[in-house]
Image: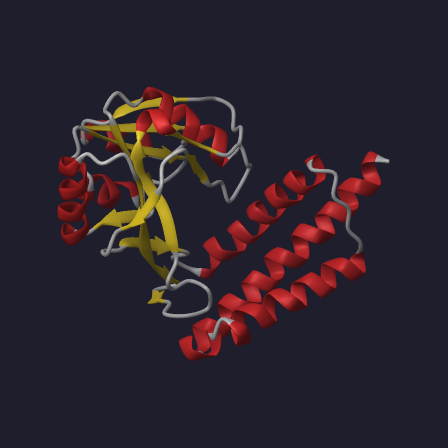
Length: 248
């Protein structure tokens, strides 16, 4: 009844825990975009159906590739750094057995450099991940894709565990990659930017995360997260300004 779909690239450090938590599903579909580590072998050891692609069309399009390979009527989309708890597993099995024409979102409990964040815009963090295969698809966004579904969305009680940003090296890597993808996506939508706009948006991202979303209650890591959000936003708008200038 259930297909789990996952997209990967160089996730050998995390994918085994993800697959272990999803081993109860009827099938696991993995679409890998050219991992150079042991990701593919680990996935195959867990019995996953692995497809390798040579290009990278963005998160949304890649997830749609995985969705197209699913054969079961219900689909659960996971990221490689996410885990399904026993409680969430039982809840998912229950709603699948009820077989109501609905999609389901669930809270996500996310860690940042080893600390689970209770504020900062990270909690509650609802993500729609469980849906009927023929009634949903992912947006074609390069990054921060979303599920587009024709069904009403209900909310599950138990959370996905999200082991994100293991260390500062990973934070800096994702600041660079996500800001680039965000700038390219904004450019494709005809948006423009400037140095002043980049600074203003970066400052606002810090204020929103640290003060409005109560990041200060997460202690020193709340401050670190607010700074990294500000950097990602600043570089996204700055890169957009340079991309717009070069295109002209």
